[in-house]
Image 1 (spheres, rainbow, N blue to C red):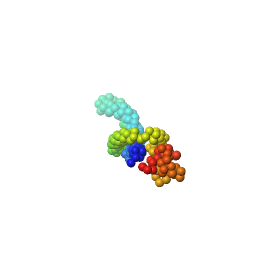
Image 2 (cartoon, helix red, strand yellow):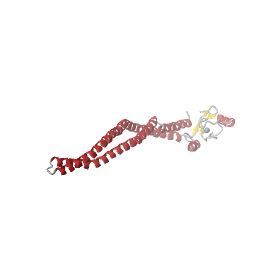
Image 3 (cartoon, rainbow, N blue to C red):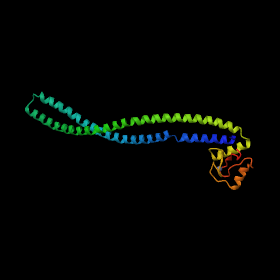
Image 4 (cartoon, protein in one colour):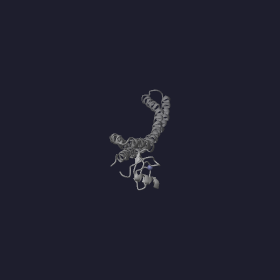
Length: 235
Ligand SMILES: [Zn+2]
């Protein structure tokens, strides 16, 4: 294998590693997990807001009912120990009946609110519980991706050292043409002629270019389309 084809293969290898790094199946999976987590966070907000509204309504009712309950207890204690005239006692009983009726209304209302709060609290709790495994999956995937990327980066670094050593063995003119084509076209600065096509850009060679390439007449034979240096016919 010629030095030029070794360099092309090394650079194409590095490009494949870069592609692989950017398209890890774990990254695709992580993106799906994160989408689902975002959906659940939004759902949790909705559920928690419904729970908070019900809890606030219950608390508000209790703030109103609590002083009435205390007042009722005080009045009942007073009625039990009453020694005054019957007129006072009648007034006391009347107030007790009135307040007891208000307290009973609050009791009914608070029972309904408590009953509605319970499933709303459960809905929030359930969603948080159901989401735990997904959060764990996200952590595992994130760690796996980081490990894979480090491993690919190490491989790329080793391959780069290898390609630099190969590149140093090329004649100066070929290396300059190669580096220039690599800078402009990417992936590699050279290409093979495959059938009658440049395998770097897939353009078909003109009969004249094909002849020149076959005869190896030019010192550096390069693709007129992508500029990549062709591996000579004799290689
Ligand atoms: Zn080409």
